[in-house]
Image (cartoon, rainbow, N blue to C red):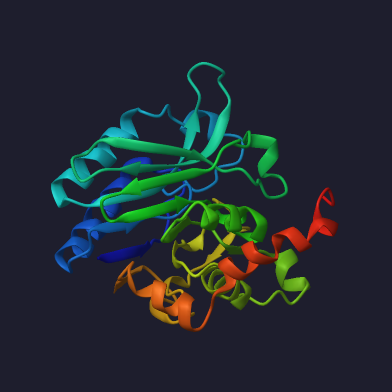
Length: 278
């Protein structure tokens, strides 16, 4: 299977412009043979402080309909981030959707772990998203979710082959005062792939993620193998990381080199001291 992580320069607050850009980039990925495409977190909007209520949409709704048309025209599975407004509660959620090659909305996932002030605008989700596709079993997370290894390990125990990760991994003035290492984003993705024996695909933004440039996305979209190999990446600017993956291959890796999940399962009865520590 060939898959693609699309890195974009967000037109903050301009949904039609971002959808036009998606259409162009997804077509390019499909021309290169991709059958699964991942777009970044809140891909259609970025963050517009004080206006997310107006930019958020129901799911299904106009944007998911447009995603469906794009996915169907290119015969790809599409994972894309967007701001959701629940039609029943009026609450906002940081969400991702999975669209089939036939243009159907297959799944919706609401980000569970909200970062800092994100919780002032969004309500967290309360359930994981695991999808058994003809291509393989995938788990969908969003950005900050993957910082929590216990959560990703839960998805791995459910048998996922691939962790799909729309993100808006950023730097800020505060991050730079702490000399934050932007390589931490890549390092955590590699770690989640290695420790769980799964493929990892992450699509990030590049450049401004809000209107004032206080939130600045760092790029580095990538596809990583279960053995930590960077199969492809886009370090800076707009672009597409694309790579072939084989979901049968990791079985040999896990058996011969990295039996981490099976060893953890075997040791679990001896780990009673870890229970009830959260």
